[in-house]
Image 1 (cartoon, rainbow over the protein chains, first blue to last red):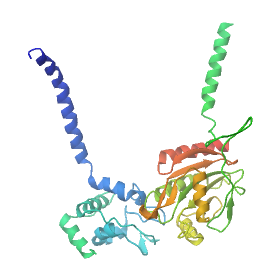
Image 2 (image 1 turned 135 degrees about the horizontal axis):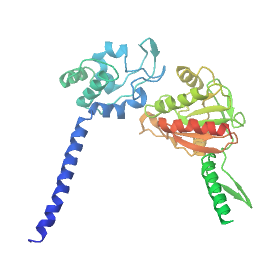
Image 3 (image 1 turned 60 degrees about the vertical axis):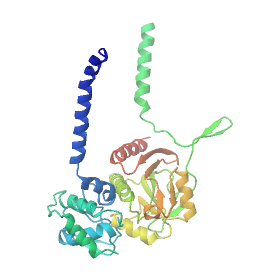
Image 4 (image 1 turned 120 degrees about the horizontal axis):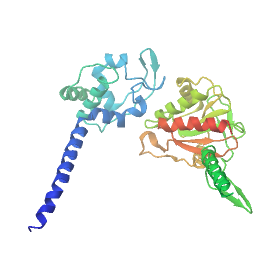
Length: 140
Length: 201
């Protein structure tokens, strides 16, 4: 028993280091915006990393006049998709955006807040209560 | 004498190393016929592009081309692939030795007028270099296999189809020289460099 004690003491600095690294990683992960992650996995393939869209096929989110004027409809569009003609920054679009019906209100809030505060966009942050209220209007 | 041999060996090794990067391989299964080995070549095909013109292995003979499989209403990786293909297209625009071949796998919805509209929305106003091609369903799927690509309908998949996002680089003789991940900008940068290398072959 006496002999094994110094060995454990040697291990202590390593364990402490590992604990610190672990805690730092958790903190870093927490700091990564959840909206950014959701955007990357749900939206980015079409709207692109910089929110620029794709020519006359997919409208931009960055610096978009449509986004600014239609803030109230974003939650429902993210959940149920969108089709039909629209004009964004003077360009005519008429494609189909797919629905994301499995997204929870909190996730939709995170996506809206990421889009609203990225690439130079400076729209107001939306709260969960508001998102839920807006989603009720388009519930099936 | 020994010294000369060592020097010669060193030069030879250096030459071998520097030339290795020059030639792209010919990919696919080889066929052995007696003492001859033949590299895999893309089989004959004939499709229609957005201008209703025939695009075939004959019309592309002697031309370098990049092939991919997509569909216009694809909600997943296609827009990213189209964006990368567009970057390469713009890089080689005006060079009629380089072509791009985007096959639709949604043969029912993506008619020639639909493909034409899609091309126009991508600012591809003529079909001289970038062909959005349509063909009978079975032939397109067989062609995807010929390029070693995955493409098939699946009602459970987003948009109704499963397909890979690879680009195949084919030389003027129909040999596949490389594959790239069509959604990765770095790999497409490499593809652009490889096309330049093929052009000077």
